Every structure is written in structure tokens, then in C-alpha cells.
Length: 398
Image 1 (cartoon, rainbow, N blue to C red):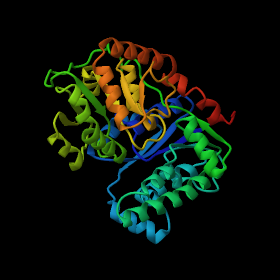
Image 2: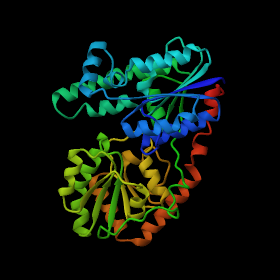
Image 3: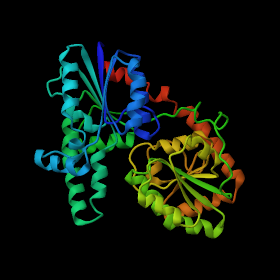
């Protein structure tokens, strides 16, 4: 193995959201194999500032801020006949940089994180190409196509259809395609017919997410009990989850436990999310210094996602912090854990309220599930164990 070209739709640093956490640990693993050239997009000035600190760690780094508005990406997608996702991440500067690295003759391997970046891998690349889709994005857009106004339904149907064809084409070119769970891998095999498909799951840093670690404790600004949801709050599945939970589940919980608070913890809350703070017991925090403070302060952590793909880091983080989690079936799907022992899985909205109320009424049950959750994560979800297949995949041994 000579040099690796690593392409990601978002810089892997700081690893403070789900996709960045996964790409960060993959990148660290790749660094142990060969020199790595990193090409990625930054969301904002904060990402660019951290990029300057990271440059010395890699063979080379090309990061540019992605400032293309969605309407422009939509027009480009229609004119070029490509998915909006590809147009949104298309950059001539990124393409030239990747071409230069490949043309050097030293790039023997390309690792792509997220399907949007596969557009920068030439069809005639002679080295080994590993594609980490993580999730089946086309299926996500297909699920959106049945809701919203007629225009958005058409947009999402088109996106799902075009991404489906693009993903299948990329898988045919790639030497290996990776997904975050066996459920996602099986779904992709069935949709695309691809065979060289592997499940490489997400891990968790159990030293960082440790209830005995040092971190700032949450000030008692809320009355007990406290429910917590964590996530990037401009991400549609998270927005829909907290809105549904606030409107449909919290009233039933507060009927049984009137002092219950629900904290929505995560940066970039949309206006729709911020407005939820007008509801009884609901608080929107925005960005926080350390999410562990809120996880540690929670009596119950909820993951009421209605649409979810792959493994939810937010669930693993809460489990690692020895917290009882009530998750929707969608949020729990990619996690190998036992309902009633390591977490509680709700069948529907009514079940979410019932299970949360059950936990709030039983401190011993909360403690027992939380302790079992941490033990389970420590035994099965360390990053070293999760990434153990990657070396063979990169070298062509599987």
C-alpha cells in the first residue's frame, strides 16, 4: 500500500456528530496503514479553524467551505441530470485536487466516506476503491416521497430514484462497499444486486463516555425527572422526532409525572425546534459544551426517531453513560442489544409514553438497565473491535 486518498463530504474533525465520529475513527485507522491525503468539505469557519490544526497530521489536506445554497444545487441537478445530493457537493476545485493526487501515481487506494463524494473517483482508477456508504441514502429519500407538498414529493421521488441508480453504479465500480449495520448491508444487496458488501459498524469511546469520567455536572435548572434527546438539530429525522415526542408523548408522561422536563440538546436548532420550548416542560438548549453533562443528568434518554438508518450514535453514547434508553424500533434497529435488558424499544407513540413512565416510576429498573447497557457497549462496541475488518478490506483480503 503506497498512499491513500480519503474523501469525505464533511471534515472528520472535531468528531462531535454522528457522521464525523464515524469518519474520524475510520481515518485514524487508515493512518496506521499508509500516508493519507484528506479531501473534505467544511460546514463553517469553526471547521476550517480546526482544519489548520490538523494539517500536519496528514500527507496533505484539501478542505473547502461548502457554501452552495440548496436552490442552486437543485438547478444544477436538473441541468446535469444528477441527484441533488451530488450537485450540492460538486466542486471543480475538489475535482482538480483529487485528479492531481491520483495522477501522481502514488495513490494506490481510495477510501470514500458518503456517497456524494464518489463523483471524484474516476471510472478508470486502477487502484483499490473502498466506498463507505454508511446508510442507504436512496431509501431515506424514498421514505420522504410520501409526505409534504406535491413539489417536495416529486423532488424526493426523483432524488430517491436517481440516488438508487447512482449507488448501484458506484457499488459496481468499488472493490468493497461498506454499511453501518448488517440490516443496511442486506437492504443494499437486495436493492442493487451488489455482492461485495460488508457491514462495519460504529463504535463508541467508552473512556470518554464514562459516567465516572471528569466533566462538568449539570446545574439543577430542571425539576426532576429529566428526559434528554441529543442530536444535530437541523437534521430532518431529529427535528421530526423531537416534534412528535413533544406534542404526542410528553402530555401522557406529564399526566403521570407532572414535573417531567424534556431537554432537546444539540446545535443548530431550527426555528421549528426552538418553538417547541413554548410547550410545557420542553427546553431547547442549542449547542452545549459537553453532551456528557446532559446525559449524566438525565433520568431517561429518549431516541424517538421515526425515520432512522444504520446505527444511532446517540443511543450508544447514552448506553455507555449507563443511562436507560427508550428508543423507537427505527432507532434501535442497527444496535445489537436486548429489549428489556440493555434498553427499551417502543412499538409506537403510546408505547414510548408507557415505557418512559415505567422507568420514571422505578429507580431500580433505571439503574439495572443503565448498568447492563454500559457493560454491553464496553463488551461489543469499542472502535477497535468494530474496525477490525478494515485492514483486510483495504488490502483486498476480503
